[in-house]
Every structure is written in C-alpha cells, then in structure tokens.
Length: 121
Image 1 (cartoon, helix red, strand yellow):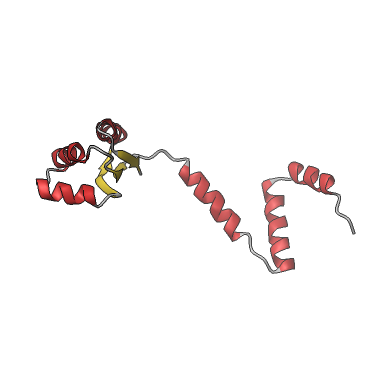
Image 2 (cartoon, rainbow, N blue to C red; image 1 turned 90 degrees about the horizontal axis):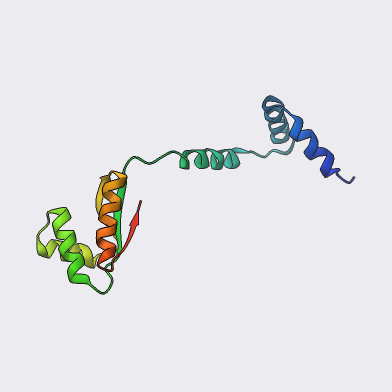
C-alpha cells in the first residue's frame, strides 16, 4: 500500500495540537516506540532561545603574545604571576565565571587585543 504523503501532510497541517498529541500516542502504542527524544530536543531548543544572564570567559589559546596575556589574566583574576602563568599554560581554561555580558565582552576584547583566542560560554 502506497502512502499519499501530500494528503497526510495536509491533514497534519489542519490538525489541532490535541489531535496531533492523540496521533503521537496512537503511533507509540501501535508500534511500541516513543517520541521522547524529539520532544526533549524541542525542549532543549526552546531553552537555548532564552537570554543568558551570566557568561564565563574561556581562554582557548594564548597566541604569540603569551606574556601580555599572562599580565591581563593576573590583573583580572588578582592571581600572582606564577598562578596566572599556570592558568594561561593550562589553556583552554575558564578565566572568569559569572560575568555580565558587557563585562565578558570587555575581557574578551582585552585578551583578543593581545592575540589570545577567547570563547564566551
């Protein structure tokens, strides 16, 4: 039996959410499958659309001006010189956590200005 795909799609377009929900349940019961994964993916996509309120600044690479990057890391973290060097040497590493978007972008720009590669998370 060949399916009339266009007809099925037209019917689905005209269906209400309740009717689509009943259809999904009937398919799950009939074929012993679950639609949990697609529903979870849709929920994750909806959550990704929410605006972030805090950002982490991750140093991905120090680049060629490592000494300048160490100085900036020392300045923004309040760490000693040796600790700042270890942090930079450990890249990729999160330098600061929980910053506002403006603070995170400012720090990112400062680090990128001296050749570092930075990611906001």
